[in-house]
Image 1 (cartoon, rainbow, N blue to C red):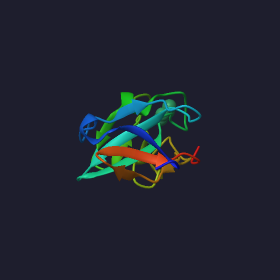
Image 2 (cartoon, rainbow, N blue to C red):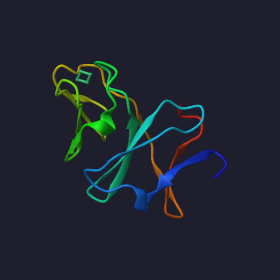
Image 3 (cartoon, rainbow, N blue to C red):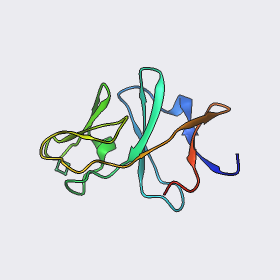
Image 4 (tube, helix red, strand yellow):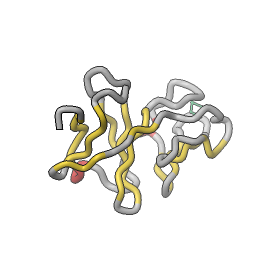
Length: 106
Ligand code: FES
């Protein structure tokens, strides 16, 4: 467990309502639920300075609130223009009902 950091509890995240977390030594992150699984990505759009959790989760995509670009929350791949550069994704582990990522993943 020492190599993981806890981002939040699974109960804190609902599908289509991703949350923003700011763990120490990491950029702002977005935590999502989709189809019973949890995903973590960077929370800043790669097209501008928009916070993705201020946008809209549509299935496995997160749509940016600024210009309608979108990313796949599973892979980070840009799925709608004007976004081109992917967002970083993080491997998720579930530990005692908590959503965790590797402490060295930043
Ligand atoms: S800032 Fe996100 S699509 Fe432009």
